[in-house]
Length: 360
Image 1 (cartoon, rainbow, N blue to C red):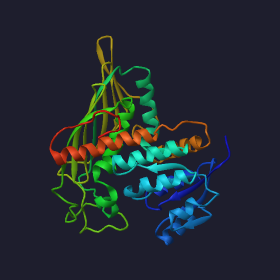
Image 2 (image 1 turned 45 degrees about the horizontal axis):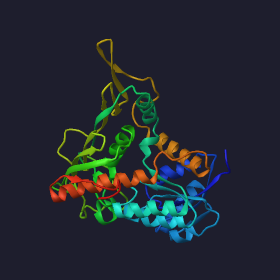
Image 3 (image 1 turned 90 degrees about the vertical axis):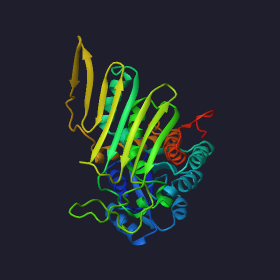
Image 4 (image 1 turned 180 degrees about the horizontal axis):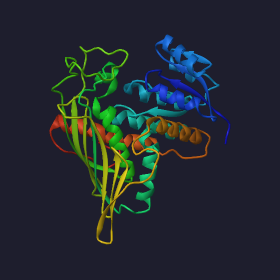
């Protein structure tokens, strides 16, 4: 292996723990500094994970010559600015999903990657999960044939976390950008990342955060405020790709549904695959349809292991041993899809992408 990668983490909120734990567990990383606007929180995380220094301004962290690479775990609307500054400061970057909150900002990040020659990995963590890797092996070997349809669902009956997640100015959107992106991306990745051709979508804001509901608990951010919410409750979409394939998506923070649901499924000319809720493959042999259940340690997402795999891969990228599985170009394409869904809902028409792969 190469020399240990010296790491700075920007943003010490809840998702940062997944990064910090994974860096702490790796022999290839050395945690140097943590930055957060809340100095007390930064110091608590530094003490917990053994960081040498803390900062309250990310610019000061980027000026630290002892740092080689950064994880960006801040509000979505700050991702692009911090990533661009980090790249120009000579740091490699792992930025949490989504890459940013608009196609325009995403293109600026992509430009900075090209200008600086530094490496950027988008935090599409499900790409690094062991079950995704297994299904991709079957896909790459042609066992599913041509994948022409995928369906992703991530339904929370009561699950608006509040805080910055519920503030559209900082988050850029609600369940579509927060949880829907996970199933969209993992399915798109397994489909071979075809270029998007058009999107249709609907976004609904009828139920709010349903703070009135009793007798059922749900995750709340540290700054949860039941009086504030400006993001959608629910979104659905149909995404069409240039190769003729399509994907449908449902994503909600709150919905009058019987149960919570996470589902990600692929359908091809030779077989199918279930990524969630449990790993399964579908095939046909000797005129008989078969359900194939791989013998694996876990049949669903192990989020801690997925983050460890993602961080381990990022460290290899920083050391020049691997190319990232989730490059900036994929972050741009994902922003096209997500922003296109919001635009399609607002205009109540299908949004067609023409010309440049990154044009809107």
